[in-house]
Amino acid sequence: MSVTGFCCSSDVKIEQIFISSEHNFVGHYGQPPGTSPLIEKERIACVAGKGLLGDRYFNHAEDYKGQITFFAAEVFERLCTHFGIREKPAGVLRRNVIVSGIDLLSLIGCEFEIQGVKFRGTQHCAPCEWMDVAFAPGAKKFLKENAGGLRAKILSDGELHLGDAQLRIVKEAEAFPSNA
Image (cartoon, rainbow, N blue to C red; front, side, top):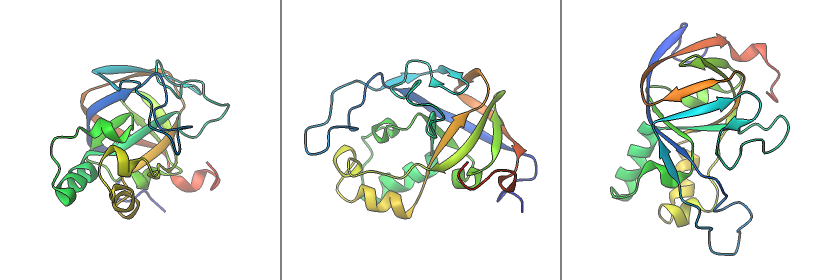
């Protein structure tokens, strides 16, 4: 079984990169969100097994499945169109890397490489209740139906930067157990 839409590599583009040093939503259920700013970066250091240097999930937990999160720019565009909202940036979704040109969910269970950094797609980065607060009422439902987020583990040290890139499949999904 091969990854949907792939032979060996595909052209992608890293549109935006975000980190935040603290959680604004995790641990705030039933309370107002936190106020830690989202920082947009041109490049970011990826540390194998730990996460993105400076991000709130860096060294979060051993073998954490969400060391980095990706979100499809195309899904964000559909979200904005659906709600008629253009003034909110993709960063409001609190995902780390906004990328275009790839069906991110096809990477679940795969080992892949972008800009020399290796990752393993672990699971859909499902939207939480806060999406209705951060973006618009109904955003969680829309994003659940139009999944565009991917959690991944970082397998090698390196740096991601904005711009065009090649996404290369290193190992296909069936090479890993379902609990990747």
